[in-house]
Amino acid sequence: MNITEKIIARASNKNTVSPGDVVFGNVDKLMIHDVSGPGVIKVFEEWSKRGIQLEKVWDADKIWVSEDHFVPSADRISAENISKLTDWAKKFGIKKHFKYGLGQYGICHTLSHEEALVLPGEFYVGGDSHTNTTGALGALAVGLGHTDIAYAMMHGRIWLKVPETMLFKLVGKKPPHIMAKDIILKIISDIGTDGANYKAMEFAGDVVSEMSMEERLTLTNMTTEAGAKNGIIEPDAVTDEYIRQRTANPYRPVSGDDPNYLEEYTYEIDKLEPTVAKPYSPQNAAAARELQGVEVNKAYIGSCTGAKLEDLRSAAQILKGKKVKIRTEVLPAAQSIYLKAMKEGLIEIFMEAGAVVGPPTCGACCGAHMGILAKDEICVSTTNRNFPGRMGHVESQTYLASPLVVAASALKGKITDPRDIAK
Image 1: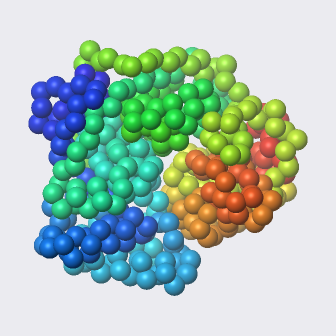
Image 2: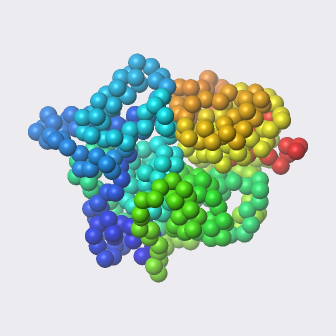
Image 3: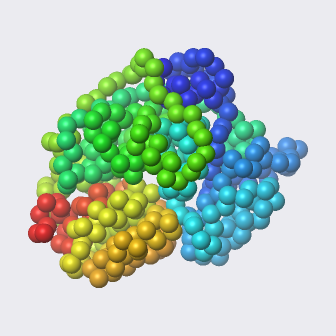
């Protein structure tokens, strides 16, 4: 079995599983945030009308709550949702609640690894489609809808069908101008946004072995944009070092054993160009140099995909000592990352370049608040989606790119390959 199958077998107390099997898996960790949480609470309220009462959650210590999508509160409804979620979490004894304005908080898919809330080998479910991100740690990380999250929260288990697995081998020597974002955009452009529907996307190869954990997280994050059930990377020494820097809690890593794959793809990364996904799909990719005449109104460095510490470092190396030509926003993905970036001098670099540095939030990425796009505005962004209206007006446009490309574009005011910025 491959790693996805082995984790499912462990979670379902079976010796073996095969693609297509339907099993009930015991959940190790569960997450809700300020958008999915109120939706889950509504499910419980509807069940209550039918006589199904939630007396207690299955394990309050294994559930955590993130305030990230509508913080700072965008409007009255957002504020009331956070208040409602806070009261509910207190009622059921959920102590891992990362609240805006009370120390560490941030984007849920960042906290999952930044706070070591999910460990290798675990079966983790979250009320958000980009829960796949945490598969970079060697966990089975799956996004679920409100009803499934409510069931898992009540019973500590959930059904799933064992997915077929696609293997992506990344080989060669990764050039300094190439980031994981370029790689995953290239893969999605090849297989399409439905190319991995209800399948697992596993990444391996020399390039992956040499990647930092934060770069690996970008790969698995965007498996969602290919329709994948989950993205995953087998744990190794890089994984262990990353986890041990954050927790001493024991964990049981899983690796594949005589694995079988539906399909195998090999990518020679040293031949890859800095890549940009044009509107209105992550699969609509082109080389950055092919788009160098496209003028943009805004550069956005943020989100679970593009505002990890290494993402900020990459952007800062381009922006240092220079001035941006367009509206540029930098939002670190978590308060802890913000603090580290400040201590390293990155925040000063961004602000001296003319950028605005804001609090961790999903607001602009999901087109909710904190910098949404107006009609006809064009943004180059480190985020993960660019369908119509994703970052604001339905007639705005978003180009997806790596932090290096976004920073370079901010300096030129148009889509720019980072190799074309004078040192």
